[in-house]
Image (tube, rainbow, N blue to C red):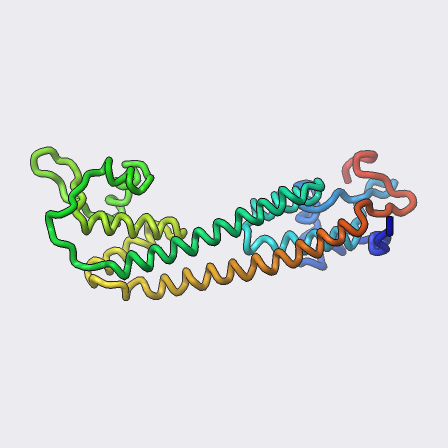
Amino acid sequence: MRRNLQDDVRLRPIDLARGHGLSTQAVRNYEEAGILPEAARTVHGYRTYTPRHAQALSAFLALLPGHGHATATAIMQAVNRDAPEDALRLIDESHAQLLDDRRTLQAVEAALRDLAPVPAGRGDTFVGPLSRRLGIRPATLRKWERAGLVQPRRDRQTGYRVFSAADVRDALLVHQLRRGGYLLEQIAPLMAQVRSAGGVAPLESMLGDWHARLSARSRAMLAGAAALDAYLGCRAAAPEPHRAAGERPRAAVATA
């Protein structure tokens, strides 16, 4: 098997850290977490890295913006344990989530386009049926009410919350915005504006920002894929790095 000559190059932890704007402790932590391949050790127990480790670190840092820390970590762990199919599945799941987020945004935009005066007294419902429709707990609807996101009236005889068609519309909109990652305190003033303005104008800037964030995440995924593909190619070209004379596997020496 052809040896990757780059694996003969030895890098100290500080070399790897400086090359990526990190601390040496961060590099050690990434190795311990399985984000980097296991480092070789000198006879004195000091870690030595290679350009392969630098490429792994570059791949991880490129994956972070598009996939988040947990998924990026799981992807690198899978690659380093020689389970590329697991890594690719995780990437596919991230892309599926991104597509679902785009569909959520489209649904929010559609819901906003449909905002219109609703005749009073039609389409009334209660907490239970509405929570089942949204797939949330009744307590969540009550939390939204306390935050001013929905404003159901109370039945005079029973005291039960009664959601009119307009209230249901507001609850659907809040649900979509929550799925889009917005906090209750961010949604509350927007819902107040929507109710008072009766149109989509108050949310136009938010929707523009949402589009921009999804596009940035999509581009970040492309960059992460390119960096990971380069690392996979490096591993395929030389699965077993060459160890310099005097170096031993990590398991054979005390941690340093």
